[in-house]
Image (cartoon, rainbow, N blue to C red):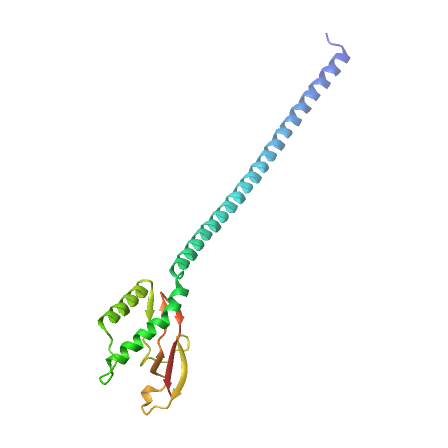
Length: 185
């Protein structure tokens, strides 16, 4: 038979075991809560990392597109200075051709000079040069440079380009020389 002390010790042991079980259950519950919190934090960190990655990737893609576009624009306009330097030569050819076409002109625009003119014009056109057609058009301050205004009889000619003194040019879609014009007032 168990003595009173043994029974007390046995009850104490049972109480301690029960308390340990309760502590273990509470600890497991705390661990589950801690684990859930950790999973939530990890998911948030993962989403943040994905967001940073996507933004960085988008920025890099935009950078590539921008530098590629700038490079193409550079190739298009690389010869701009040379073409601008050749424009007075083209103007001289056009003036000589116009002067030789006058009915009473002693000047002759020979076949050889005409071939050189057309060759120069074709080369510049193939490089993106395009002349402005200004005569009769409305005056546009963004494309024309008004040298003078002259009075006109017809109201329809007011604000229109009457004469082009120096032709303007585009290199692709960019104006490289403004047309110098006479405007009707």
